[in-house]
Image (tube, rainbow, N blue to C red; front, side, top):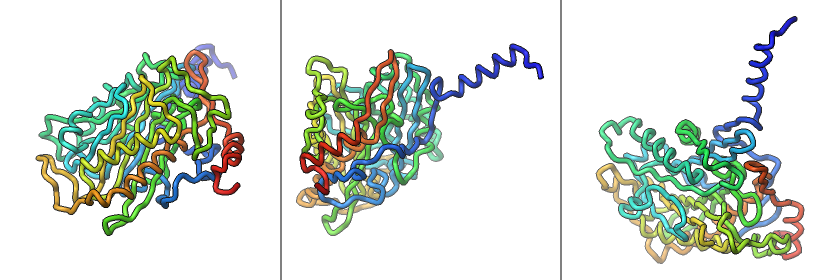
Amino acid sequence: MIIHRPAVLLIAWFVLLLHPCVFARVYGGEENASRPRLRDIGVTIGFLPVGKFNAITDVPGVRVGHTTINRGDEIRTGVTAIVPHGGNVFREKVPAAVFVGNGFGKLAGLSQVQELGTIETPIILTSTLNVPEAMAALMEYTLGLPGNEAVRSVNPVVGETNDGYLNNIRLRPVTKEDILDAVQTAREGPVPEGSVGAGRGTQCLGFKGGIGTASRKVETGGGEYTVGVLVQSNFGGTLTVNGAPVGKVLGRRPSLHTDRKGSCMIVLATDAPVDSRPLERMARRAIYAMARTGAIYSNGSGDYAIAFSTHPLLRVSGDGRRIRAVKDLAGSELTPLFLAVQEATEEAILNSIVRAETVCGWKGHCSEAISIERLVEICRNHRATDTQ
């Protein structure tokens, strides 16, 4: 059989195009079975019980989707979408709040959330220079939903961290289709973690960072509620795991003269009946919890916590009215939720590191995954594991 040269070139072109090292988009994310979660290696943060999946999706109705983008030797980035509930979020807005730990960032939609105390779109996390594309995609998605035909104003909520060490960020490779796919493939159940979605090109506390999640269950005010946290970790400091000085032992000290390693986006969900003011107080605790993992909140770190409640009786209609009346939790009943936030945030950040695999990208830069063997050894030596 004779194969003409043009046919050979065409076949070679398709092979290169489809090869994951040249171009790859993974919609929905993938489980990283080769890397354990924190609890799999015998490290338990706090004492509150966790939900079924130990993830933000333990909060009823919350869904998460990822689009992971690899292209050639330069592009290591992606998108992560958090969808508050399965209905039309614009027509059934969720009470929400934002707390700014350090404002060196580009959190789109911040001022309206602070002013009105609601979120009316899914939440997108992505790379810094792709925030405008994410905003445009969220607007298109929201305007296209049935029932929104007369809508003339949308407040997209988009958070970011800068993945410019592993990713050629100036190419701005994330497209509207990538963002819409993350939203439309969002699902309940286990959440892929590590170097996926918006965490593909991030670093954290001297190691490869990424997406991490965790949850806690509490009883307060006569009810049982769930708190779930998802993080996009990309900040500096010296890694501490359940009190064990892991980063110090491994010689991973922070650089105090560069802002290259910065930013953390924290998304917090709960089904507790709490409005924007208590949610802001909960969001504060999420930022505080970063310190437990070794964060130094550097000058160039954009550290934000976005909190929302999925309680169906607290949702707000298009004209700004509560859909139904419900009794909010009193201030004296919030302490268990505060503890849940701090435990889940700390564990989510650590899951983002433990689950991440080594990634190499732009200009040959590599971010190394933490050694599980050394991590376990150090935690045992410092009595930070469940069994010594």
